[in-house]
Amino acid sequence: MTKFAVVGTGALGGYYGGLLARAGSDIHFLMRSDAEYVRQHGLRVDSKNGDFHVPQVNVYSDVSQMPKCDCIILALKSTQNQLLTDLLLPLMHDDSMVLVLQNGLHVEQATREVVGPGRVAGGCCFLCSNKVGPGHIRHLDYGKILMGPFRGLDDTESGPSMTRLATLQGELVAAGIECQITESLTWARWRKLMWNIPFNGLSVILNSSTDKIMAHPESRALAKSIITEVRQTALDCGHFIEPEFIQYMMDHTDEMVPYDSSMRLDFLAGRPIEVEAIYGNALRAAERANVSAPIIRTMYQQLKFLADHR
Amino acid sequence: MTKFAVVGTGALGGYYGGLLARAGSDIHFLMRSDAEYVRQHGLRVDSKNGDFHVPQVNVYSDVSQMPKCDCIILALKSTQNQLLTDLLLPLMHDDSMVLVLQNGLHVEQATREVVGPGRVAGGCCFLCSNKVGPGHIRHLDYGKILMGPFRGLDDTESGPSMTRLATLQGELVAAGIECQITESLTWARWRKLMWNIPFNGLSVILNSSTDKIMAHPESRALAKSIITEVRQTALDCGHFIEPEFIQYMMDHTDEMVPYDSSMRLDFLAGRPIEVEAIYGNALRAAERANVSAPIIRTMYQQLKFLADHR
Image (cartoon, rainbow over all chains, first blue to last red; front, top):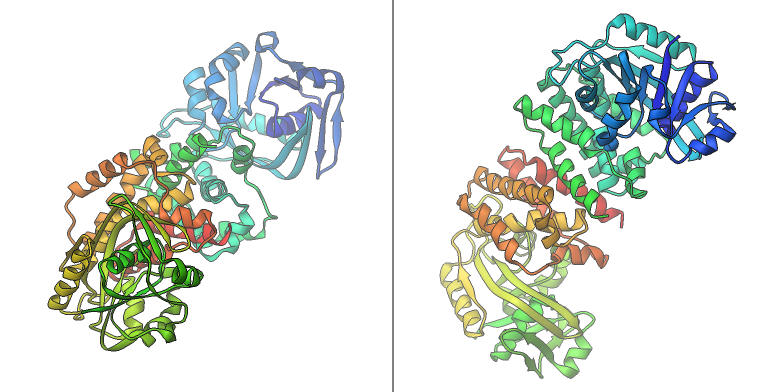
């Protein structure tokens, strides 16, 4: 039986970890401020798929108290990646792997640098959830994880074996988590950037929700130009995305409920925003492929300024 | 003796018109809210070159009461250009000309469409002045006009003769206005856009003054990228600007006092902003030359959205 750790028990780690705990997994949560509360009251998830409560949870506020685990689910925001050495290494035995559930492109590289090659997988999460109180998660919609081995910045390393990922997938699915495996994590990350790059950034720069951005002809045209530039950059970096996906992203966003992106929520709350993981890493990939991405670069520069002038 | 009209007596029209009035020119001011006040109290200019007061001024609040004039100085913001037919035609005799002192590229075209070919000159104004009260202008710095004939969107029409512009220049200079003549108004306009496009727009989008934009490494790099793109677009449209002018614009902005651009002042005050004259017309010129200007277009689209969501 896989022994899991969850590092970062927020809206995402609390949701997926809660489902694993409900299913009876051997799972250990690292928490900061919520640890004492959850130790006494357990973990509560209000989900569109059915509310549930896990009364007994293995909770730790100090990583040195935790057991070594087989699979470490990394659910911190990438803006806290300077903590990775201190948080991951004490949890690792010789055969541990890390599943990085962070936003952005090549976000696994920071973990890879800490734990070495062959031990890191990544997952694109299509999840809409919030933390509404200590140990209390509200799951609004979606929840799929698209998971694949991390093969390094240039896709030349080996990641964890597909056999191992298949076993992990089986455990996640058995716990009620929709999970699929992809051969190319980088391809999956680029596809997700086709939403995150336009709408995370514009919602901060234009101080607006996605429905207003889609309703105004100029910002709507800009969103489509950005999506188109992200796709072209992905192609130039060697990852094929079908051209129809551009219009699909527009239609998908039109159909969403009025939505504040996670970056806008972070920005308005004064938290760090994931500019480097989403924009910086995409630009660095473009630079390695010798292609320019002028709108992505403009947004990166604008967001870096805004993050420093709240 | 040239009979002048000033249409739009704000920070710019009030300053230049005030200097002409002080010099004893035959000059007639169209004003809106300030008319009655100025009729009673005259026009006051506090200038770094010496304060002055013109007690008796020819003021009108209705253009139909004004005499026909030889030279009409158009000093309205271009966002009011829908008024041009009503305001200009009653002032024109068969040999009248219009001097358009508005910001942006090809801003003279709207006047040209109203008054016909051969009668329109434009001036790039390098002026720092504010209206601080009714009939009361504060002149902070600069003041030069770089004036040339408007030759149409493709530089193929004839404008007013150089002889006529030389006479006008002489009258302006005699009144204490620094004025130079350029063969290519479009070239002069593009050079000015190399400041206006980066700093007017960024100051609104980033909600910041120019010194803060110059002080942050990412927005500073973005400003330089924009200046570079404006220069390249000018070149692609057939107008040579020396490459050293990019760094000159950066150095010049570094040396400025902390400065709120006119567009930011308009934006914060809830007034219309000159997005079309500065960004829209530059983009349309780029389109006619079949070149893309991705950062300028991005800023245009962002500003159009922001102008509609204050």
